[in-house]
Image (spheres, rainbow over the protein chains, first blue to last red):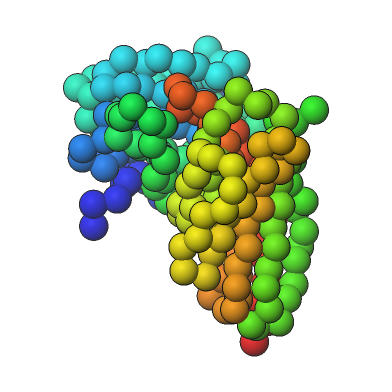
Length: 115
Length: 110
């Protein structure tokens, strides 16, 4: 399977703990995106990388959140000092670079539950 | 005002019916339109992608864009129980981030 892969699928943690999620994009895709989705809502954009450069961040990405893509391949999203409101599905997507905006392909997400 | 508006449903139809799903958007600078299907506890799966006004057909699915009224639609012909899912519309600009509607939950009854 060569789709977008996310790990872990489900993370349960206590409030105040730090968590880190990993995303492996489709191998030939230069662009990588992180979104957050809560129940009954569509995904909301968090941040975006082109290769290793983080080019855009949403105002939803508070200073407790940090994302990296060190070698332009996989990416990690870390949340420090988790809060109840961080409970959500965290989705990763990737797309190829091109002249036209190419559609994004999503992984199955990491579901975060804060106790 | 949210940039992409979508009726959340739920929408229930009998098997074989034609389904019409609709969205409106507010930012005319965003030129690309997508429909995704999302099953429970799964990520969104790309169904249709278009950047022009008019119709685009793929099997039982037809995407329609009317830029003059900022209205996008997805039609599903001969609906099947396996089409039961949440359908998300989205649009996006040249830099890439997508703006999604809330999704419409569809149930196709056998």
